[in-house]
Length: 317
Image (tube, rainbow, N blue to C red; front, side, top):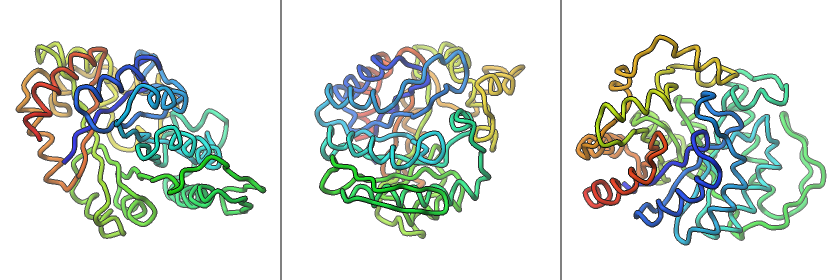
């Protein structure tokens, strides 16, 4: 299983995200995924840059680093034709080292244009049509299409890689994993769920890459890590469908009022012990993931990357 690095747009300024990608490559990570939001999960996180501008910057400061969005919602806030255009340009800037990660999104980001927030089954239908439309546009020809959810009129994307753009599909539920296997070039998930991997493979994803996000908080002490994680990423305590349905950062803040930092011990790997990180990574490998990318919570990205270079990457290789 290959290890990668997560760039959290909700926590870091755009220039820092670009710098972190370069540092991650220098530390030995071969790939990274960058989140695509217009709002952070909580107001305290404080950032949410336009991801396509950041990717252009990353393209200029890295040489080998494979980058994917983790993930883009091409359904409501941004029309899939525009996402196809942005992804094609990114792939041209990073030949052979960009992929588009897509998912059905969250109300947190998608309600902002005033459009209706669809039901889960409708979002899956929209995602399937969006991916089909984007793949057609990446052929480089003029396209007119009037689908159930999306219409385009005589549109052509002129700058497109010869092989198009790979699409990784995020899935947390079995029906989404089945769809990901049918329409995707890879799977993205945020938990070591073997049943999701199996559903993806049975749906047509056998042999395709499977990316799992691992959220952690490295610090010199477990108490320090716990404090940072609770201050910066309390939304780790939000469970179930709430993460898809809540519309505002303040809603997530209200949902974790009265919770305690100690509760994160059941949810996250925290502190300085590399064995705990290696144990969690093994869970992803055992579940069938081919790639795991690590989201370090908090401002100390340099400390984590040094820890990863010294303690994780050599011991996992």
